Length: 302
Length: 201
Image (tube, rainbow over all chains, first blue to last red; front, side, top):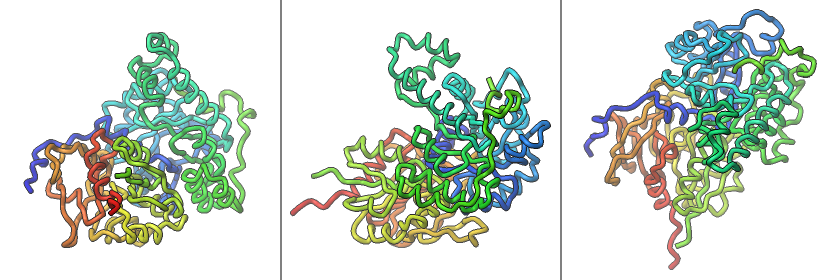
């Protein structure tokens, strides 16, 4: 057999490749880690990727101050420690932090409201990067604006570092409800829908035609138990990010494994009952009603 | 002939895309998460995703022996990307903390190297010449493994840049790329041929 295909130039960094990579995380759990040891625990527990950051959201909340991209040395240590994909966070709008992470060989960038925003008006133009991006969204307009900028994956914002699932549920129900309502609209109303959502028209057309976002949609922010993770899957999300919920609990290894199983078997209450047993104490948690508006992270981003 | 009944291992990864592609070809498709889900199937697809995650869940839910038995009893298997790793006799590039070892079904006479083409920024798409197909297949390689060694019974169906990326051995098919991410259903049709139920006498 001749190897004629080697004559064709391989394409890299296309939307298909970036979105296709995000598809591979589906039905999986992406775990926040702050050390190479935690990354190894996450990988052994069945994480589909790790998110490398200096402080988990619960500590960012407790410490205050400006939260930035992590030290490249720590990110490199985590990349060397595991074979699963490594994600890392940049501040909203901070395209230079993103260039640095791409140069480090990070597999996915989270343009995250959990860090202190760098730009109060503009998000990063993501389409020009070879590395794919995930962005948070509270509603469909926000999700489609991020996809329009080139995001390959969307997640709920939740209220990170609280262990309170309510805000993630609200974002998921809002986005999925708005998708259902667009699906039901006649096509001649879509331009006005796009205007009202402040979303790109062609992406509104896509949602109308397919009844789904053009990229995968994960839950994030406040997931603390296997039941929380299964709840988000039932609502119609594709997978789960877990931040403070694992390494702020009393038995991270056990809890991480249980959340991985819960995302696969979310439709099977018998399995969920078995894996939810005897996990030790969950993270303490903060009821989000007790947060003054300035302490809320989910409101960041525009 | 009745439509073949195909399972898609739905522990984690791109199982929905495989399901849609197989259904578009008329197969009867179901999702497999527990050993009992294998009953009555003619073939099973092991999708792309994270091979360490899928392997962990296969251990947790007791799927290793039932999958080997399923193949021994005549079931066809197709592994794409992570799935190909799970079929191989030998796996290289497993996580260091696993002692460099990754569990696999070891039903296919291959040695596979994980993440052989590099990290995500190195992932690529390329038209691929496939033995038996008259036009190139649009192959998407995502942090893809390569097939480094094959046994005598293994037929090499495609290479990219000299590396083996698609192979067949009897009722087993393995691809290091992701046919389910394209609209091209020709490799799914090939697999349905391998998994076709025997014609009643």
